[in-house]
Length: 232
Image (cartoon, rainbow, N blue to C red; front, side, top):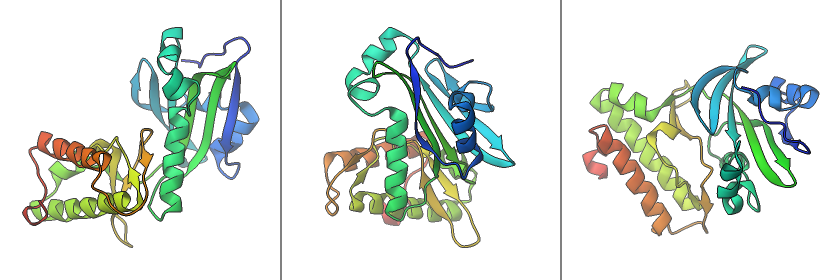
């Protein structure tokens, strides 16, 4: 599916890392070529957007497209993400930038673009480098109890440190947490954080932090799992 091209609409490339093949294409051909459905392998899709795996010059990337095809879709987001507020794609990019700036592993954004007409958002695109990890909702059930306990302890430490630094994710599901195993150490990577909020570093016993933990608890319960007993 091609992306909309409303009369008077214009793509704005907010990020185009020309050191990367997607960034080069975005500058040379326009970002729509990366965001149109069919540009890569579709991983997830709905009426309002899709995620695709792109391979450019032998390197993998993920492209997420947000689509506001109808006037109703655009009106619904007036104060949230289509007008007078950052797009979801831009919020995701900001969250990843914050994580990288604060010492957390996070995918690098190579393209960020918005299609607007008279300031109203019609579509948005974010392209990131792929992370060689497995989503925890898929990985945890396949692990031995001992390995799973170790990963859950690492996850608890990761979220605790995010909160201590002031980050509240508000989208803290196991499917949006990747477990990366590398020779120099394993770690968690958080993706898809368009609803994040920042608080002053330090105390992390506020409502948003507690909601993050409740969301994780519910995800684990849905898999028939729980935190290691010593950490509960």
